Image 1 (spheres, one colour):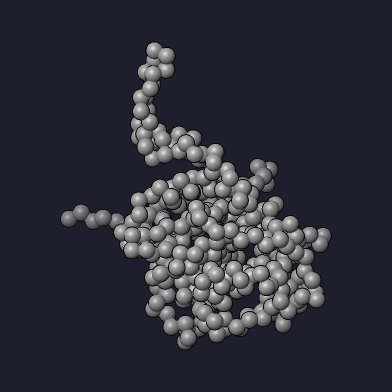
Image 2 (spheres, helix red, strand yellow; image 1 turned 90 degrees about the horizontal axis):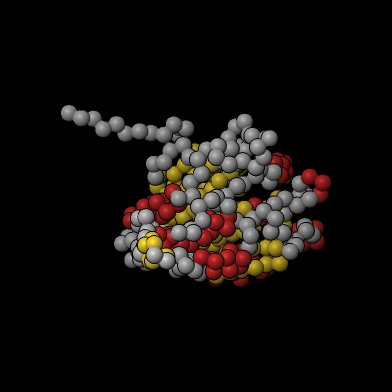
Length: 363
């Protein structure tokens, strides 16, 4: 019990951290492998992310705002994931059946139902939602039905105000892909993610509507035209993309990610698809120190940066990642893990904070 209460304190501290930006995309290869990739950004500090490996059969219980314990469950599936700030908080992961889930910050728009002590046994704090989905379900359809039967509650912070929450992307090896949002004090929204993209605020339905403002974008170059007696012509390749937003706000990233992800050539197989996913997400990489919320309060440790990027092949159960310190792509093959025997493990994402460099030796 004391361990759970200590964890709750970590959750409350975690909820005060500002998350700047996250961008997620979906790709499919020619051999029908489904790839889910995303970035995660954070301001003010390093989020101390780690690689988490959990076996099937582990028992969990969700800490509640009143410092008691809520929903209890036994994991049906093992998973591999990346934590945020604390090893219990899973930001992104995939389980042994190929179900993927991740959380994206949803500032000013997500609003959970207040905690109700009468419903404590069926209540799950929002920071446990990714872990609950990864350990409990194998398909998107299972998640869609089960989430209607639980109460997702916030961790209460200062002055009785609920902490900011997220919205969630969930996908499976069959191609299922949804966005889950909880708004207006507990109203559950589930969207089929036909565009295969998620960023942050505003809501997913608004982001889809906003795409209509960019109906003119295309991969083709524009042809020369006469403007009065003056001939005007494209300066070079890419003139069909004039107007594609380039800033790092969530609406702009949503439009840019949707354009890239839905216009990229379909790659032949896993290696090509994973490489393409990382190439696309390089367009959303925020260098260390480039953004922060208040110019009068520049963080001393680290300002917003793309702290890690993942790409997951749901069909082959392959988890790839790179970090802000090491751009080399690393791989965990879930097929090589016996989730019935493996122990819970917490592994560092990086062995060093210095980018490795391979020197080319000339003979």
